[in-house]
Length: 400
Ligand SMILES: [Zn+2]
Image (cartoon, protein in one colour):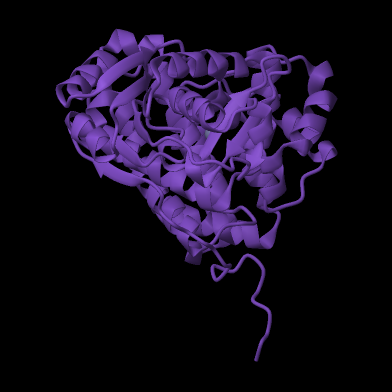
């Protein structure tokens, strides 16, 4: 009686409350006006980026919102890897328009900017004050998140990732109040992504399921989301690469990315994300590329831990890349092989040497990676020395 539960058991405790209503379906964008009204919106800030404006989605969303009787102000200056400066500009726009709700339309950057803006607009101070979890004391405005990529899963999480303008360090600012009240998943909106964006965000979604499936915080709920997300992504990401207009595959990828976001909300991320952030900060490598390059090496490193090995084998078995009963090591190898094939299909650079990474920076980046918050959830303890080895491994050229 009263024996402690084994560590990393799927009976690990969790406290999950879905904060985000999910509305999924082709043309579900049409419902944004009605859903905004449900949330009591009168004056909305529509947060988006210039690329999405070109695709025409914000114009359509604004029209639907206006025909539902809402006043709409557009902030379309969102940048990739949004900084504190971008958030400050968004706050000014929100204050000038005296808004009572947000609609974020775009990729992770647009959703992160809207969330970051919401913190400061409602709680004051600066972005750095909200680095961590649960730092907002006052209520925040409701947010409708509408992703146009299938990757970050930001629509299903309560974190804003904002880079410090000066240091470029990424700050994860999380609060249950920052989560979107409603996420609208309309697969049609993801058809307009350029191939490079599809590849980078798709690989990011894959990294989210692979990392969340093994973290120290993983639990029955997060595993359900990670495994289901992986089952959706494995057959459909290659389909999307071969036919960008495959709406069914796009829709399944969009769901997979959202489920991966729910997994992150419940179990956080791991060493591939910790290693990727300094690559983005120092060398401007796009997030999905950076995590993609590090992921196979991190999987091999973590696979030396017996519990993580089993967790990877179970993940690989969900979409039948492998079968646990054929052996755990075999399943891990099958998973790594599949990741490598996928990275090649995505036409991702496979070596840090291809991205002009300066070897002399490895010790600095390794130190920064070891200090990343996400590193603390990795299933194996990972030191700065380990990160040097992981970066070294990622320097080796890879065949296709
Ligand atoms: Zn990511």
